[in-house]
Length: 135
Image (cartoon, rainbow, N blue to C red):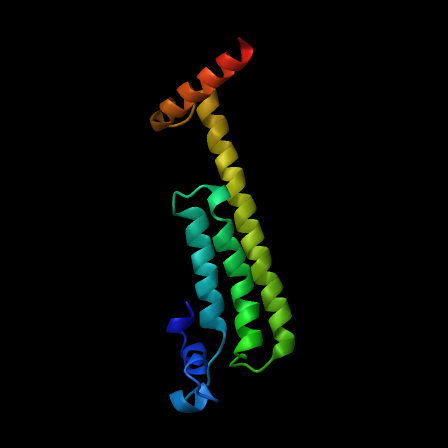
């Protein structure tokens, strides 16, 4: 993510003022939206379980505040870093809760038998576990 941003890549390479080297002013918006995209795609599009997404969630919540505190911000507004960091952390938390809720809903549909045909194997496994627990 940071390798595609001109400001942060310049800072990693030791350029004191990357906006002067690029010839235009830069912003954190590219970084913030990239982190947002990774979070949303990993929680909505990819078939990954909620319990295995925690490293992505931690990384996305900590990436922006760590980068702005270590490398600085092209906007130069450190007082804006905290609200943006909190909003990004809230986005990650809401995405995690949504993913967990989606998994619960899929599980309930599979148990009730009204889910898609691909869930029949899960329904059989859960049915066998229920029968094993009762017997």
